[in-house]
Length: 328
Image 1 (tube, rainbow, N blue to C red):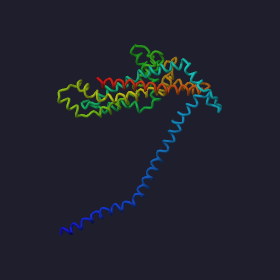
Image 2: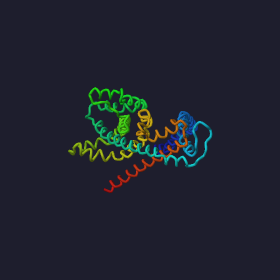
Image 3: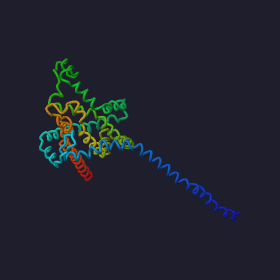
Image 4: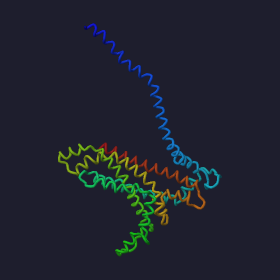
């Protein structure tokens, strides 16, 4: 019996090897199916690649060439002028005014969005808050609204002659309110409207970051007798510091793209008090009687460098702060 059982054992590898042998002919068929599947994936992605290349990559590359030529955009004549366009832009005081206005706009918008959305996210993330889902939806609703439409509507609402806000102010005996037509208040008003429009995006960022904090830590802190302030200081805040860098960079970069809202609300006025760099570029490239695409392209390239410098400084300061905090 023992010998027969021992002799019968070698038959097991042959049985297990039979399916392996049957799988080998199927491998080329599997590879063929995988190739067909990949071809379908690339076929569906091809329109995206083509459109992205035509309307994003090509204009970016072409703008570097246009910045080196003198061209009005209507004729085929392009005269190479080298860095003369850059010299003209840097010598233009209106360019530096646009840079200053853009930076001031960013300094108003970014802290309000980052820190305002942070504290509001803390409140909306509380399980004890009733109707938290409703409030999240209401704060995010302006984000899905077309920015140009928001600008047109806000210009009507804030119109000093017939806007609802001015009419209500006159009924209360406060007189007409002139926010967008005054050079002293137009930029701040536009910045606050921009914050309201895109506040929901930053709020969603912080809500997503808060979901990464384990609930077990809150339960342990509650058992140990920690209060709300202590829990926020020793648990929530340290764990959210890494997200502060990402959210701040995304928000600051987003502040440099306010063209559609500013153009529909103020078009850079009054008296160029809200002319950010994007409107400055648009004025020379498309709004001028004789467009100067070379000059505008040089301003656009310098604008891109400005964004890189601002984001680089932000990353550098954040890295220094993190290193000093780690040493402490």
